[in-house]
Image (tube, rainbow, N blue to C red; front, side, top):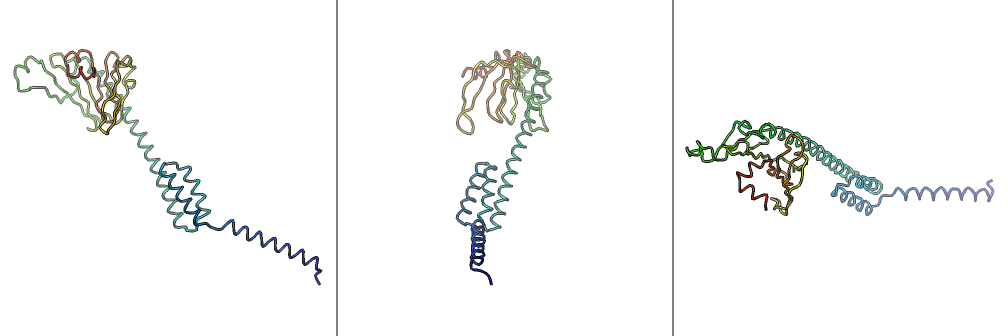
Length: 248
């Protein structure tokens, strides 16, 4: 026969084990309200592309949500956002590399033709080409172009035909260009101009003081696919309208 004291001890142990089991069950119980809150916070973090915070809320969601399908959908959203961010970073790096290569090619092209534009490109268009007097005197502007990157980009040089060393080179890169990228630079003037997307962007006139373009000038606009110019004093003496732009 079991003594009363022993029965009491066994009973107390049983009750303790039962309480622990109930506590464990309570800790593992899913909470739909907290589940929805966690899912919402996860998606809010994804909207601002804070994937680290999103994954922290995702871990919490797994402890509160009973719907495996909803959790799997959440995982796909996180993975898709992470893939999107990674691709954007990869595309930006590739675009930056392409831009640097384009700027280097442009600088070499300018350096090779800065004393005479006549060899800068085979495609040439001159003003008033039907005017025989102008054709003979060459007192007019001509433009030569050269395709780059399979025609994705185009280099252009405008020059005074009678003085082919009076040159203005232009290209439109996909990203903004700085004076420093074109060569060591001294700022002449900086001002704001209207942007095509609204607001304003910075425009700078600078003197290039180093590298293959040293001694020339630049007019750069801090916007993608904007005309960026490199020119010399002889050109400014010939093109009053362009020279006026530098005085705006």
